[in-house]
Amino acid sequence: MKQIKELGLKIQDAVKVFPELKKYVRDGKLDFGNREARILYNRAIAKAVFGLDINYHPKALVTPPISRYIFLKTFLRGKEKVLEIGTGHSALMSIMANKLFDCEVWATEVSEEFLRYAKANIEKNNAKVRLIRSNGGLIRGVIPKEEKFDVIFSAPPYYEKPTKGVLTKIEAVGGGKYGEEFSIMLLSEAKDYLRSKGKVALFLPNKEPLLNAIKKEAEKCGYKVKDITFKAGTRIRHSLIFQI
Ligand SMILES: C[S@@+](CC[C@H](N)C(=O)[O-])C[C@H]1O[C@@H](n2cnc3c(N)ncnc32)[C@H](O)[C@@H]1O
Image (cartoon, rainbow, N blue to C red; front, side, top):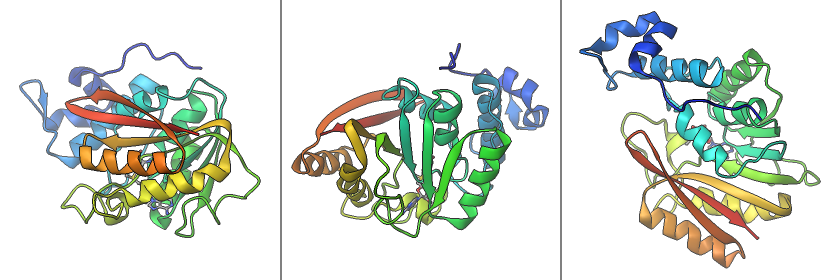
């Protein structure tokens, strides 16, 4: 497993990686309101901290590498066989799982356009990820029945309705009253694809009604739930880990 020394990157060091960033810096502070600045800064982190070369889709979620790495650390120990549902365009978590945790990685994505980006990122980083196009389903009918995993993980869409601005609809809308539907369906299908002692791990925001709705249904399905809270930048995130 690759050791990561420091989980952060000063703005002045990011500028050394991508000198174009300089035009978004005033008094030592980066204009995080600017999408191009956010993309360049996160690409610099991917490169300087994790040794990864990631291209982001210009209009979609700018996946932050540090929060995704912390999430993976909450359940990966190295060399597991894993499945990610919804790589997004960056495919950052799948690439990290393979390159940093030495996992055998299977992954799905439903958006044709994101798949193209994901494939290019996987190839550019020489990662071994078996990337599968979803037909709209989550696991059943997408992943061969005989494949079993140590971990099935996802940063699921979790809004109840389309959001303004930063996320495209397919990245955002989880369905249900609190955005919980996608996660609950994933948990219910995952049971048939887990090895014994296998786990499901979900990356979620600090929204109590959403977390409670997912936990409640998971318990009904027979899962035990562990909720690990962590801070990424100014945001509080949850790694919900489910085991039968
Ligand atoms: C919130 S984004 C997370 C993306 C990325 N994994 C990350 O960590 O930022 C959710 C992703 O799930 C994808 N998605 C939505 N429905 C899906 C389905 N049925 N199967 C696979 N992926 C799906 C979306 O296109 C989007 O890329």
